[in-house]
Image 1 (cartoon, rainbow, N blue to C red):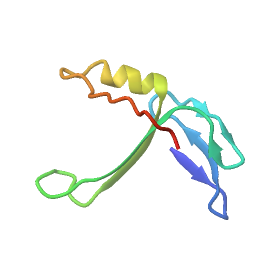
Image 2 (image 1 turned 90 degrees about the vertical axis):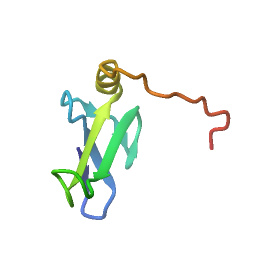
Image 3 (image 1 turned 180 degrees about the horizontal axis):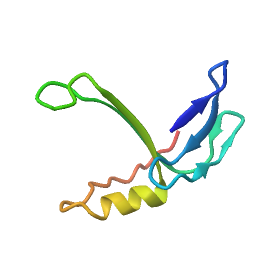
Length: 80
């Protein structure tokens, strides 16, 4: 869950899974976070709804450890 200041700067990020307050300094998120911003479309029961949430790295790891098919991971060789 993200909160912004009146001028649109990122103020805080809270993990929707465990409630941990993630580190934000000067409007920049300073630790690992998995943001989701998903628009449900046709053929779903949530057609037209936008779901947003953030997970800390620990909650992300717990979530994907339950998958029957592992997450596909690719190493990025250049970081900009």
